[in-house]
Length: 95
Image (cartoon, rainbow, N blue to C red; front, side):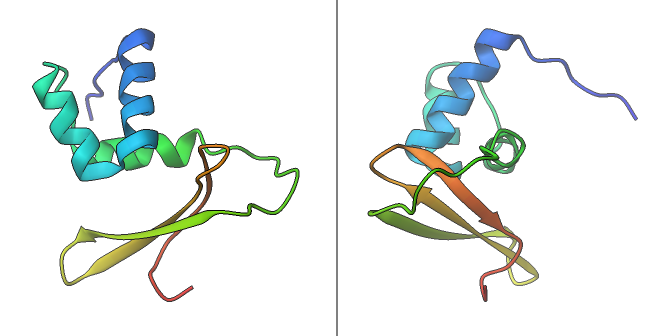
């Protein structure tokens, strides 16, 4: 199966868009900036780069739910809004 390559600078910009805006909004911004990327790809980039260590409990936590495939598979992302990093990506919306 062929895999696309992505320049490091492009990946960093798309990653920051995903952190700031999330999947769909980050995808729309990337398309406007002529760096098209799918919302699912942005969320996957967040999952792969999620920090391993957690120093303290976040004070301000955002919970966002999305559908990988509408009606079939859902996910949840937890983001620390003060430090601006992904705390956890959960495989479903029930956890």
